[in-house]
Image (cartoon, rainbow, N blue to C red; front, side, top):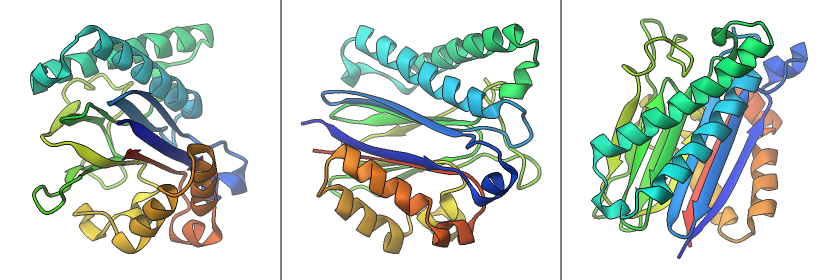
Amino acid sequence: MGWRIYAASATGKSHLDKGIPCQDAFAFHADGEVLVAVVCDGAGSAASSDIGSRLTADTVVRSLAAAWAQQGDASATSEQAVAGLAAAAVLDARAALSAVAAAAQAELSSYAATLVGFVGDADRGWFFHIGDGLGVAEAADAQAHAARVSAPENGEYANETYFVTGEAWREHLRVLAVPYPVARLNLMSDGAMPFAMEKGNAGLYRPFIDPVARYLASVDEDAGSRALFGTLDDSRTHGITSDDKTLLIALRV
């Protein structure tokens, strides 16, 4: 058993019109049953958030995958231990971002990005989350286990959120256990949520996600990721939201 992972990011219409690069990023690492996956969304107000989201995603996945391999028996891992591993990975990302910021004589906040990620094995998993974006873990036995949703955290206003670069990142690092084997993992930036999620984010929007997942299960990762990009970059999705859009779907095979 293992994972097939399909992922894509598409630049939003508002960014295309202004010549701004996509500020979303994703990264993942799969080793047999173990999966580490991350989606980051750079702050629209931060000058270098495209760099920040890419560096954050890559560093967190690399750091957490290495720590997970070292800690041995994942079945004995507690939620508290996962929170510690996730915090250490975020610290590594903040150190990498600080080095880049110092070299560019820029503020750390110029590289602001949110983070939603998952780490798990054959038996169970955990979401780790700072800010907005969203994750949904679906069980192989959907009748026995309801899908687990790691929801976005916004500030006082709907367009406010929290970032890896923020001083209060520890207070806003959330860990959510998924106490069952995951058959399908869905991670997304907030730009994908209007068409991938039901209103109120109670669950996935089935008329969109189920046909997409069925198609992905029939093709290899490269073909599936290209098709996923085509869906995210379609005029119909641009018509729903002008934001950057990232969607990562991991299927257990």
